[in-house]
Length: 202
Length: 202
DNA sequence: GTGGTAAGATAGTAATCAATTACTATCTTA
DNA sequence: TAAGATAGTAATTGATTACTATCTTACCAC
Image (tube, each protein chain N blue to C red):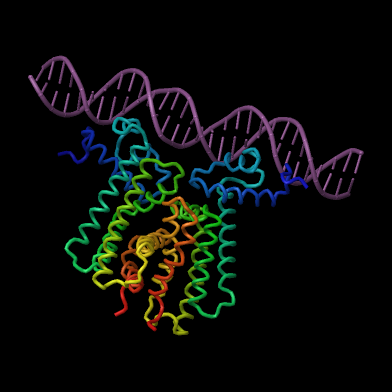
């Protein structure tokens, strides 16, 4: 059981590639990640990458698929079994922050993709990810209004935008400080303000 | 009075360069803006740019200086003469959104710079910009607590983070939709939630 | 064991980029 | 108005990039 076997089956090699990109994005500008850098990180020659991906774009697509799958699974799991919609939103928020803290390259890659002018497969993947994220939020917000936890006059769309924006803000602060741990510390404090903004007057 | 004189004094040429970069960033990924594209946009040959800037990094530095100067001036002007700290914050918020709507390339460039691993002059400029922005917010928040407009138990740091994050969220939504006008429409709705989160119970 | 094949190494290619060079055109001023 | 300074052109450079062609090795069914 060599921990670093030279030869890997194609699907395993693809998985390793994706993980390498995620890791690299944690410490450098995603748009500056070259195929050579990816290969070096996984102890492979640059040309060998193209045995498993038709081109670089396909690598990015696979990476964003990985992100979408894992992030949605994570927030779904976190909210599972929580009755209170507001508590479920908080759990989603915290697990999202946790995910980002574990993979600091993720928000960078997502923003980097959204910046693109052309509509790449990776960009479309990010767009559907955020769309699905929004759907989950809207369901919770509606449920929260019905249960009386959230203000009946709350603007659903604005509340969803602000939820994601709140996370964005935390991420940006950590990018500024170069300190991921900071997010963990600040997350509950920032969410407290958000919660106060959407909950019904008691 | 030729509107496009071939020869320009160096300082005017530098100003035109900065404006070109800001304009280009509005419609394409800032990290993909080449010196050739900048030159073409201003009807100049690529090499001529280096008569006015020692290298490309210096161009970016000049651009971010332009942004910092204009944005801070704009939000300062918007809050001027407003007695209520909360109203001043709202004015700052709206004028910031307006600035971004006028120059959609600006948030892209700022995020692009923050993503960099190395500490470039442009990145440092963005960092000090946000720092100064934060100082203004903290002053207003303190004033708001003193006047009773803001909740006395409010977490200042979290409130400042969320203020900027709220703008981030709006910008991201407009990037997603590819529709800048949307920001204008959503800004008051999103700020309403934020305001509810920080103001004192009445 | 052996042959076939999947995976990797090596060594390229063409394109693109920032930056530089030699030269020219246009202003400014003594 | 001559001379120097400033600004621009056009062509080229070396470095870097994604991608490819060819050769080599490891693995696995039989």
